[in-house]
Image (tube, rainbow over all chains, first blue to last red; front, side, top):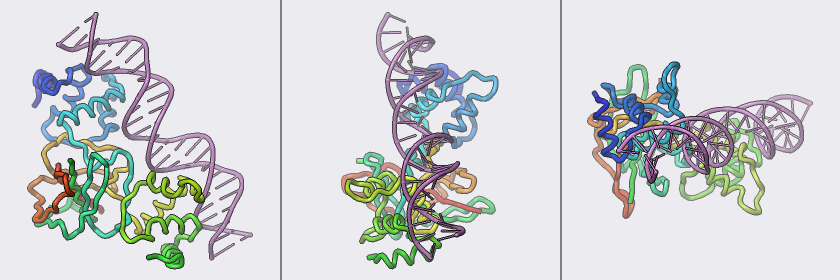
Length: 136
Length: 136
DNA sequence: CTACTTGCAAAAGGTTTGCAACCGG
DNA sequence: CCGGTTGCAAACCTTTTGCAAGTAG
């Protein structure tokens, strides 16, 4: 899917110097048929397994952050290690301001879904939450 | 809104021994007009400010977990301290299995919203994400 | 009394940082 | 060469844990 040259160009076009490590990580992430989800932990394991060249954890963190800023990756439902709790236990949704990190309630009735997917086999929908990220 | 007696009963009815600390925390959380969001950090600050009696951080964690299990609180968009990334940067949604902690993509077209709220003044919608929690 | 709780300090993750060595252009 | 990067270890932050002391019933 991606040639090394394409990756190098992609990196360059974002102002990222195409170092050995970045190219290798980019290959692991983007040179595949399907997109996927990962955590730093799983990525680290995949990269630093047995015989292969090692890349330090710090560099993996750096790179993933750089790729996310460059728009190659998306961070999912993360609140940067801090757990948020809500005294409102009724089903409802939230605005999340990434600047101020503030949550604002959206009443349940303010959002209507006209189409909801069928859950994976053998699983039941427990709860459905909409998070609308906002910015200035 | 809540008398001490009500709180004690509420705790008892969930099998939680109404200790001084739990009652105090419950008061802070539920004895107000509006529901609100908090993190352990903000709650800790509110409780352990200047002159007041102190409650240890560990107890606050314990209590909040107990309250959450009892259904008094809801945890919001937390993935327990680990950040998830997605190589799929197209707008799309997710199933999140709390048991296996696995994310599954839901194609954008599989969910349709027929009503979306207006964002707070001066803010723009940057992105809208639906997370459907599933369980066995 | 006894079992459940608390509180402290230490430990445990995950993530970030400081800084010298390294390397891509 | 120069400035951006890497890698290591130490530092950080949030959360969890072990255990002795405290307390509600």
